[in-house]
Length: 351
Ligand code: IPM
Ligand code: MG
Image (cartoon, rainbow, N blue to C red; front, side):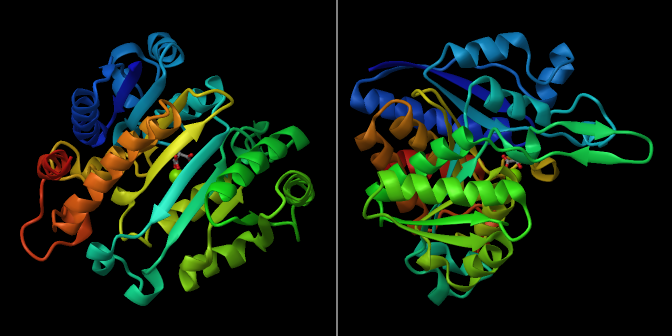
């Protein structure tokens, strides 16, 4: 098939990890007879340096006219002052909103060969296969904000329609998996959570017979994710709870460097990015872990291009590279750590 994939490397380690994922996509294209066009555009601090804004109109236009977006990371210490009006982070928030990417899929799976990289005991990690579905364009991230000299507010807003569509997506995913949904909220305190709980309950009961639904408060969910992670199948939650819980969940596989994500909307256009940030402390040294970005490219093949066989081949290749002991520094290798390029090469070889 012919596809156009916009490549937005961004800041810090973004360009290094994206380079390896692009090499994997090119290899998949050659092997399976596809024609992938992979145009690049600046985003984040890199774009601010070039154009003054974190999401230049040309980058947005490229993303909108593509079949999928492969995104690296954004953020730069030079722009980390919270008082700044223009910040690199605005680019990803604006992309999510402009492209209507209301659902963020964050699969969390563990790899036996690197159980020792996790702070949790191996017996807790066996069989962990969680799909976190994070609502991505609503809630406190996007509600009205105010600021005076003496006070600030952020407003959490959810509409019935916003909760319905994310609940439906969770329902469809649960059907393809173990048919169990955990909806995470704070319904003992927050009005938006009470609406969330009512709507999720109705949608699953009416439209997803056979899918089991449980509700958990976010504080308890944070604890259970570490105490009994293998019990979770699909976890559906609002924007900020999902942001926090998925960083926590990344400690199950042992590193943020193993956690991919897909941001999806109503059509097939999606944005794919590792859940880690730009890691400025290690940027430019060729030591960052590219596996999360490569796994995000696999999600791109699956969800935007409908290439399930190719997606599985790429995921299996990452699994083989990890099983073969090719570990970047974050995966706490026994001997010398693999470089970003070594890890990418190991995936290519396994492909
Ligand atoms: C993430 C990040 C972003 C978020 C930041 C960079 C705005 O933490 O994708 O999880 O909070 O959504
Ligand atoms: Mg986050």
